[in-house]
Each structure stands twice: as C-alpha cells, then as structure tokens.
Image 1 (tube, helix red, strand yellow):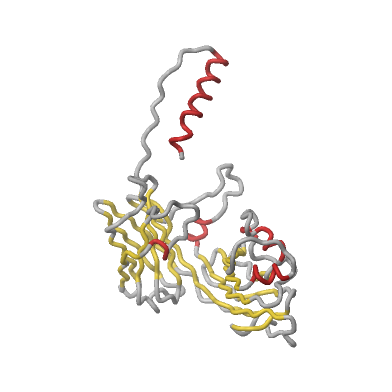
Image 2: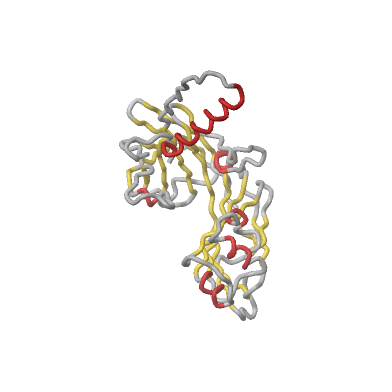
Length: 309
C-alpha cells in the first residue's frame, strides 16, 4: 500500500517546492526500515494455556513471522519454567481484511500451565531468536473477587442496569472488562434496531485506575468500541440495559503496569496510541499480566426476582 502512494506524494512535494522558491530539486534517499522483532506476551493467572505472539516491524515476502524462537517464562520464586511451541496464528490474533494465507506473525503456546501463573508471582521472560535475545520481568497483580453479583452465575431483568463491584487487587494498575454477548444482535433486531453482522458480540470496558473497582453494566462496557461502525449502534442500543434472551460471559481482569503501558491510549499524543515497551534487548514489546475473574449473566424478561444483585 505504501509503495502505491509514493509517486503521488513525491509529485505533490515537487510541485510545492517549485511554487515556493523555484529552487533546484535534490534527490532524497529514504533509509530502509530496521527489522525489529516485537513480542507480545500476556500471562493470565490460573489459565491452563499461555500464549506469546511474535511479529516483525518489516516483512519479507509478505510475512511477519518469527519462527524457530525459543520462548521461555521462568518463575523467579520456584525456578520452574514454561516452554512455548508454535501453533496456528489464529490462536493469538484474528486479522481483519488480511489477504488469505498472509502470515502476519507467529503464535506460540505453553500448554499444561495450570497453576504456573499465580497472583503476585514474579516471572522472567527470555526469547532467543538466532543471535537475538529479548528479556522482560513482571509481578502479577494480586487476587481479587467480585462483590456484586455475589454468585458467579445469575439472572438479570431485561433492560436493567447492574452496578458491578469488586475488591482491589494488589499491584493492579487497571481493570479490563471483556464481555462476550450471545444472541445480542438477534435480540436487538427483534426490537427493530438496525444492526449488521452476526452473533456473538465482543465488547470491552475499562476502569481507568487500580482503585476504580466499579462498573455500570452494560452502559460502561463498549466505550472503546464506539468508533467501530458495526458495533457503534449496538453500544448505543444497550445504554439502558440488554434485551431479553441475551447471555453474557463477562471477564474482569486486573492488569499490571506493563500491560497498561502497552495498551493505553495516547490522549495528548497527536499520533494516537502510545506504547511503552517492557521488553528489552534485541527487540521490543510487552511482557504483562492479567488476573481474570469471570461472571455468567442470563438476561430475561421476568427474572422474578433477579439474582444479579
């Protein structure tokens, strides 16, 4: 795409230079982009599978893959280690609008990892790729629990708001809420709302600090999906509650400093997203951690009485 735009940009630059000063044109050489490895490794406490996604800032033959890497996460307390193996990239990322068969990166997985990543544990990352070495360190946030609802599965009246609340997690810098909505588009269409696409729907919410431990559901979930033209009408349609027949799997995750610095938005940066890396050495990226808590919600016309309270 960049190569196709270069002639137009060059022509515009040349015309402007001639009009402004009539000076003699000078040949400009653009430096070749450096091939930098980017690693994205987010540990999830309590999960049986841990993932690492490796890709490159430049591509050769339309590939950004980083194969044959040795990815190791070591528990700095016990000395135990996880070794990662290559799997299908779809396990790590779902590309939009990519050409069929385009390799955008390499996904690695460490299986049988239940109990390895613990709340408040300290871990070290090492990635060896040919003659390059990437390293990182982190401390996982502490454990926390949902206070409301008090049960992990509950019923909620249709078109009713629910204030979720949870205890604080030690060392957490942010709480990310991911909602997996089943039958949402179908239910909205029954009410006459014009929505596109197919179910299920995934929406994300965010508590902006480690002390913000409440969220109004579903009003405050999907705030970062408003700029998606397919999801925007859905987010607007659920501001006062969900329609009847929707099932929601909700995950609230306490994120560490490394995670926050990598995914945060650059409010004062005209270039947009600001990414602060937590991986050092011969590359860049994030080595972060999430402690997740899950909640299952059934939405119905007459919960009588609703148990999500």
